[in-house]
Image (cartoon, rainbow, N blue to C red; front, side, top):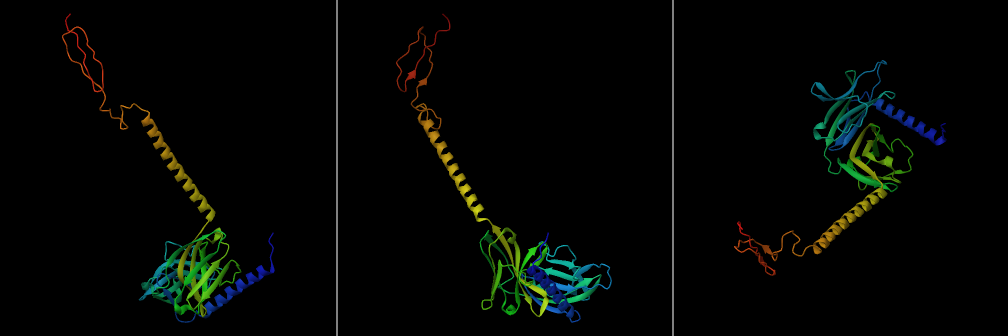
Length: 322
């Protein structure tokens, strides 16, 4: 059985109100000329278009780039907005009539005019200008430990000081904003240091669900239809206790291996000390060993002389005929 609190009801109402205001603002610009927006090389952008079909019939949605009199299709409606192996992706929210287009890893030649298309007819146009910025447009990796505090540091160009800063997370194939939707999450906090052109997001009591891909971004307060994404961050959450246990196990294995190796060498030396003194460690025969030879003699008896070190043994051979 679900329990609805006053805070949860207010949060739901605020979300719906915000979405309604967003849609109204987008619709208010639909009759204007092409929207102008700026991106940075290496960064990403999210473009939103509102589509209100005249009939209930579903129509194919696509996104194309204008080149002369033609418009080359770059992507069509897909299930997920976030597709790592693709630079262009498009999703359509039927309940809101909202098309979202994500362009990742922007390049200078991505500058130009784009159109949102439904059933072969363009209904929204965007002019994108891609600029180079040394501060941003990078992909980074960061590690955080369970139950500790993680800090994500995001740089942004000087011209975006007045923009609303935002942190997006890839979740279920979408990019969800953390702060623009006013969701109450006490573990997340954002601090915009405008003098340094940096904003930081602090995540307290990190847990396993915080692992994933994040984007540092900004929204133009005068045109909330488009979002600029500066930096892509892969956050890895690890358990410090597991790391310590693994390190201890590796140390114990290494110590055991060294001990076994030392024991084998010691046993080998002990065996070599208790073996025949005439044999060396290499298995070669000692040069002081006695040598034996047989020489013929006409006598009928064998003469054996006393044996000494390096003594040559002489044995007479009996005649063939008696």
